[in-house]
Length: 388
Image (cartoon, rainbow, N blue to C red; front, top):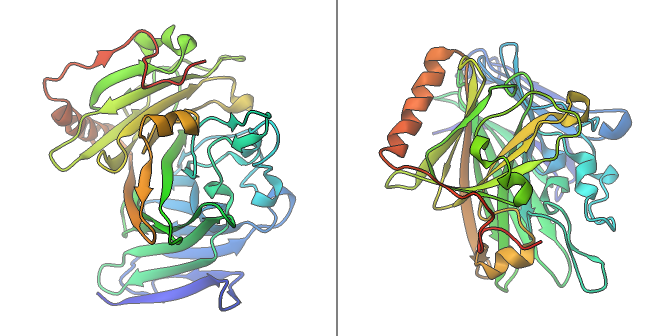
């Protein structure tokens, strides 16, 4: 298949396009579609590149400056994402990932989809002298892409935004994320193909987690996670206190203390699985699709505090659970790469716009669930949850 391509950033060739607008006049097969690239100015967003893709049914913003994350998505007037108290998207220069608390990552957190990794992706961890060994959720989300391009297929009109992001440190980990975000005209969502390449000659270990975050109006009192569940484990005693209601959500509650649940999902014979967040009335929902062989662990993060404080939930497929890196390594929950080796991950998000679409998505999940009754533990479990 032939495709037209436009380079937006190429650090090696010293190429950079500040503004670009593509329409179906540039690629006739992409009927009714537009792609725009702009650079934000002012405040914490100054210098952030945004590539907006509009396929006629769904539009979404890709952030090359922030590790190729997805800021927001819209289908009609339905916005999918959340309202963080952080005024973003935030340029990585303003995110102190390595600050002494290990929590600096939170200064830039406001995307619909943010990747966590690649050296680590979980809770912060400190060495014996109290210094940050692994910061919260890792570094890849705050690394700008050094090469970015857009292509449009001449036959199908499929739009692809490509970006390459490196997480490297002299004497330490040296890996590259090659990401492709795809969508077709009229598609109610997008698909992601990620490949992590070890650009070192020595072996490496990586972790990946897709931190997908939903707030109002999709999230609300009575909203529910629908997934083909095999096992549910509360992360700590506080989460255990609410485990009977783990898949459902309350309304806003100022001062709410987050609760996290670790899940093993069921999948088909090829490893394909999916998980949905639907609103209280079953009239709108979002479903993520991924492969359990690539991303065997699934986490549900509930943070139903007041809206000004960040009313949000995270549905998070990953190579591991977001425990401290050392603990997850001891459990063998890392991806191992030979020198110059690579590993790939596939992820997709589909937005359901009415009751019939929601019900169709639920039927797919019910088919994966079959007759299996989920095992729900009422306390944290060894091998799943880090002590303390």
